[in-house]
Image (cartoon, rainbow, N blue to C red; front, side):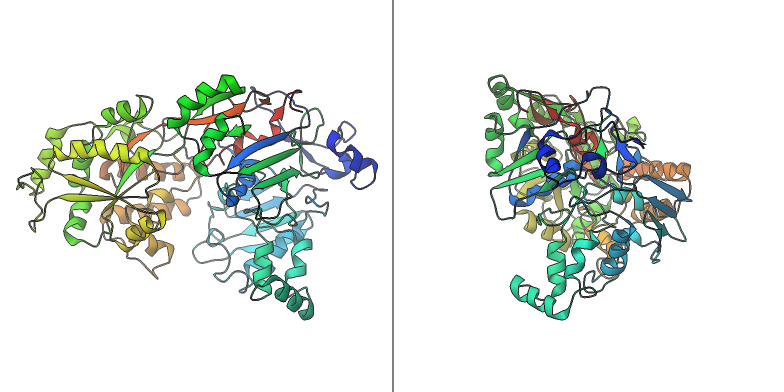
Length: 619
């Protein structure tokens, strides 16, 4: 995307003609930034026309945040090629990956027409991030490097500078996230709810009316840019929510001050509005097949594909198969922090994890559950990724019962009960309870097939379904010995993406939740890693954080991927599972193929839905 200075080529949006003519809205050349961003369409796209309303289906009210994800207007954003480029920002100057000077576009405005300037960044930093009543834990951890807060400067209305003593490789990717790090806020709107700028009397009146405990509660409730629950909150996104919750139908209308235009001078987005109808998530596939959505992927699965395909000709839509970007569609997570000492020692022995993997008949799972359409793989980066090596995908995944049994014998698990189930050192049968969140019959089907092949190696499998909350609590507490979940969230990373998923850095890593909690809490909870390979991953992650060059970061990624290849901390089953994407035949510029995942693609976001448009029949 590029910027231009001349404004006489801009075309007014038809749906805004009346507002412009009545003087309620400035003409387009006064609404867009002076250095307006011109969208460079992909080769498979064509310049569009304004108009139309796009229908979407969501399973619950909080899903309206998907429009903020799909809209994907960010300070910097990922391109479809996964390069980071300025978006809302005019440009970013970077020194040693530790000094970031952000340059705004002159004349850029919030959705209510108020100027967007460095004051909005100052308000966030001084009045929110460093205000203990609004940010009890202080600034976001992605802004803290080795315990050091950044130096933040505002040299002029269009310049902001964040500086650290050491590199902060998290900074720009966090700004580009599907759920971004917001380092700017509409100061002109939020000041009315802030104790520094509002009278005590007025604040007391607002507190009484709102039912909140104090002014901070009001401020937090009004300031929800990601959740999009406050239609009064100005935004920089392509569409603005106009419906107050609760509701079963939400309308998002075009942002008249949006910063992008196409090469023909038409202000984006092309589509005037988005209507979100709330329905039971279980009904979304059926409603999609009945032509109640123009662009639908959420709540659809591969087992809906046949039904959707059969409905497509009758209801004039296309069913496309996009790629998911997870390292494994399904993976097993041996809990190396399980409370049971005997099982904990087993789980931590790499020979046991290798044996579990070798005793899984992935080819059978592929054929029976996925009709042979997916790839049998470890939980690792995908073939499309720059880091991919065949051995990352294939190590220890061949179905080899002889080798699996040999490894289990080496572990001393030679005695069996009358069922043929091996006995542990304390005489108990080797019975592995796998926790599931109870959300997928697909997982159940996979576990049944694994159960059959594991039994041939003398291992009995039981699946324990529960709610997601109970599922997680059992893992966090150490009560779970193993769980089933999806794999790496971002399996198409570059050297600039954090390898934190590969090291114990979060309690939500189900293979080592207590080690992850220890890192996450800076040692206040959890346990320090006491396995050499896990500690090595922590050390490499720290080295990546302090690396100055691309080459250093690239080398660290490969070292961490190689450790996972050898130690198999998670047991991937399959990946490259297609995801059905339903697209109305009236809706143009939606890619035929793409990646559908929250990270790094923001689902549809990196393909710029503001450039999708309806043909004349729907406009």
